[in-house]
Amino acid sequence: MAENLSILVEKNPSESRLNELNIKCWPKYQLKFDAEETCYLLKGKVKAYPKGSTLTTDEYVEFGAGDLVIIPRGLCCTWDVSVAVDKYYKFESSSSSSSSSS
Image (cartoon, rainbow, N blue to C red; front, side):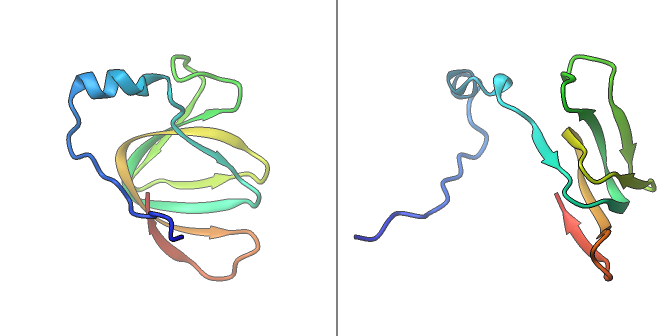
């Protein structure tokens, strides 16, 4: 029996649909860095909140387009992306750079 593996997209869901899903209680983009990452942001804006802080605190690091960012191995944080990110990045164990959009 084949599973339905189709991606379902609801474009511009209503406010009532979002409230029904209670999305404001969902986590943001949570990351754990298993290797040091060095990245250069071409576009975007991010607030990175370290593990244990909340999105309502002032405990965050903000970076964006034009910034060179080094994220240490072992860091756990939540990214609040206010402007879509396009970046070049390299992990400590990698010898080549890549371009990625988040």
